[in-house]
Image 1 (cartoon, each protein chain N blue to C red):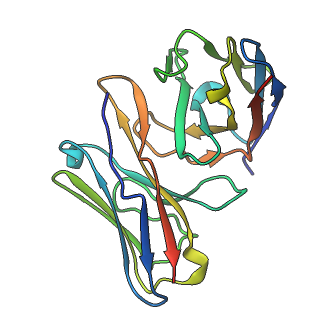
Image 2 (tube, one colour):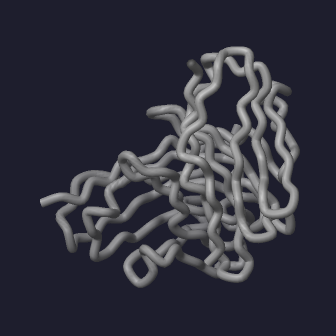
Length: 118
Length: 108
C-alpha cells in the first residue's frame, strides 16, 4: 500500500522559513515525479513544485526563488524548504506522486497546514 | 504559461446530469485529468487521460476532450457528489502543472 505522510507545517512569521517533509512508503520517490500542491483557504488547488526522477526541479512562478524542493533517496522522503514566506503562502500543503510527467497525480498525502502570520 | 478556465459553480438536481467544463487553448492536444475534493479531505482522482476512470469511481463519471474544451460529466447526480472539481494539465512549454480554479458542484 502506498502512503504519503506530510509533516512540518505550523505557524510561521512573514519573512520566516519552514521545511515540510513527505515520508513515502510503497513507492520509490527517486523513480517518480514528486510534487507539492497547495490549497489556500477559500481558494483552489495550486501546483507549487516538482522534482523529476532525473533530479530536475521546477516551480510555480509564485514561489520561484523562495521555495526549494528536494528529496532524500535513502529516507524515501520529499522536502519543501520554504523561505521568505508571505501571508499568501498560508495553505494546506499536499505532496503527490506522478508516474510520468504528463500523467495525473496518482497518490496524495493528507496534507500539512502552513499558516503565515505575525 | 498555459491557462485553463472552469466555471465557479454548477448546481444540479438529484438524478440530473452535471457538466463541468475546462477551457484552454487547443486543450485537446493535452492530457486532462480531473479531481474531486471535499472539505477536509485530499483530492481524489475521478478521470485521467481525458476519458479513463479509476476502478473505484462509479461509471456515472465520464470525461471528454475536444477542441478548446474538456468536459467532466456526472450522470444521475447524487448528494454525495457535492464537492469541488478541478481539471489539471501539464504545460510542456513551461514545465509546470496547471490546475483550473475549480468548480463547486451543489446538489439541490
